[in-house]
Length: 287
Image (cartoon, one colour):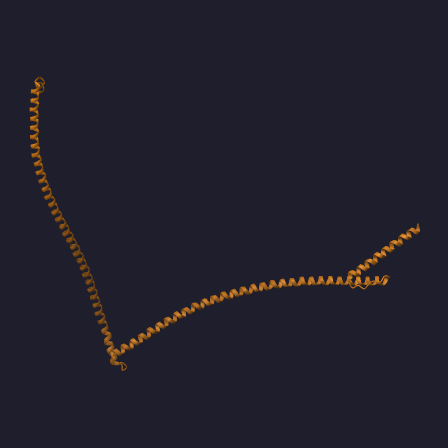
């Protein structure tokens, strides 16, 4: 049987004692566990402290190693920079050496050329010495060279003057060609203007002839009208004179042809009326 079954069949006091005993055992076990837990906690704290110390030591080691790496990197950078500077300086020196070698080579070539020129000029030196010895005009080579320099300068001036004159002549030639072309164009324009003026003159002449012809026609027509008017006025005056002579009625003297014709018309009307009256009375007498 189990402990629970025994307690169920035992007396209450026994069960209480048994429960107290069990509780004591449980309490004792808890105390033992607390002690063990305290020991373990202490051990854990010690281990944690040891780990913290080791971690701090490790961090210090890492910091030191990092500083060591930084110093090594700085040394490496300085070394690389120094190496680059030394390489650059070496290249510059090599370039400078090559330039100096080229200059030396050029100077050697110039020296050789100058030596060759000197050797060639020595012949001229000897020739000038012979000329000075022979001629009486020049006593030293410098006098001869000065004369040559003067003549050369004069020749250069003359050549420059000739070039300037050539330029001036070319400019004048260009101006002359341009002037001739402009004059030719102007002459052509003037000839065109003269031709246009002649055509205009002929046109005006024809227009004037037409106007004169029309004026002659107008004058002839006016003369004809004047002649016809004069003839009409003379006829009217003659008729008026005859009417005044034949009529027993005194009429005032009129110089206006229209009034004269009015008088003549009235006279003819009266005559016609008299004739009709006379004919009418004669016809009645017959019947």
